[in-house]
Length: 534
Ligand code: F6P
Image 1 (cartoon, rainbow, N blue to C red):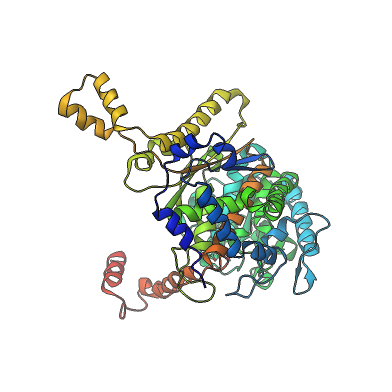
Image 2: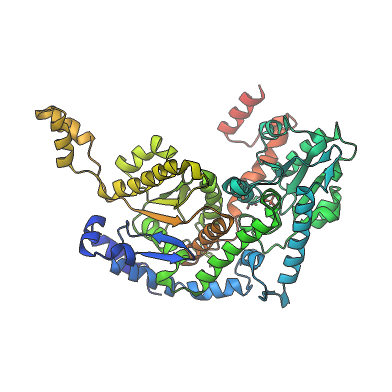
């Protein structure tokens, strides 16, 4: 088979033009290298992509079979082929009148029925009809980890202006500090615990659930009555003593990190209400429609993926920073770390061979403007290039603080401009000369003030962070991961890489308890065990 990467590699090796020169040569660049979807603008003009690179990338998507795989995913084919499962998180947000079949059966009626049960339960909690021993529920504690935590936790924070239900808390870490700090100050008599675990076996979640149950047992006659569960494992939730009326199930074709659209979103639904949750689903559905119908050259998930592939696999930039200029998206980078790195952090292709390129990048980030006062120094002047992905809203939710929003937006735009423009040695010399420096000292000081520039970034701009917008953003990134995974030729929907550590942790428990020795352990692990037990 031809090497599908060759054309892009050759084009890159021939030397990419400077981004500023691309703008100088094309007054329409900002329009031509941007795309829109339902009120959202994705600008990728501040990257080194020229027409040829973009054409080659679009070809790469075509020859990689993105369209065919996309159709297969939406049709319910078992594209997760190391686990023999369909990949149907899109079914969780499908609209009325649609039909999606798995093994011949339409899965949507069941999804709708579960959502209706969730909505009824959420409203009962919100309206005080579901009570604790001490009266209406004031606090909900969601106990889960990974995909059973990051999505709803991120979204509850993101949608704070829409939060009109009881207070929400999220416990994930097996570190007892997390559950202890969270429960401290809560009233067991008015607290509802949601145990969120697809498998209902995850040790962190089950341990924290036991701790919460014990905490409640001291004060509440029937703690089980203040528990609900979200899981695919109905047998295990029953064995745990949770009333089946309060168990919300989903199928194994919903991956953990893609699951917040369904029952795993229950805590979010309790926070913002079923109607706002429906808006969130509608935003995801709008992005699905866009992904399915827009030409690749105008298709946000495809373009976001292609920019990612260009930066990582072609230019060799190993990380990408997600920089929301939207404080309420402060957990988005953490959420995307799981979505992207657990999905595409793999070295073996679907066919079992080594990947011919690097796997997906390291994803990290923090909201602006905080990051500016922390790590942007490296982004601007470090020796490695970090492609940046800015997110920013036209409007905040604080009309009285519009002047602060303006400052926020100006900072966001200034950063992408500074990364691209940089500051030349001559400009830096002029600055130093103005300050009165001369000779060798002027030269030395000027060099510290040079910004190389030509550093790539993209900006995703939207009207306001509403449930609908958040749905669009999350679905956009989900599909971006899908497209990158198809192009890389890997299975984005398994996660074998998390297994080994779990197994070894289980084996180390008796060692730390002193029940078994460290025979067979490496010297470092044995020494650490000795120190930590001592
Ligand atoms: O860390 C691996 C993982 O399986 C994630 O993929 C998943 O989101 C998380 O653990 C939690 O799993 P569960 O929902 O089954 O508790």
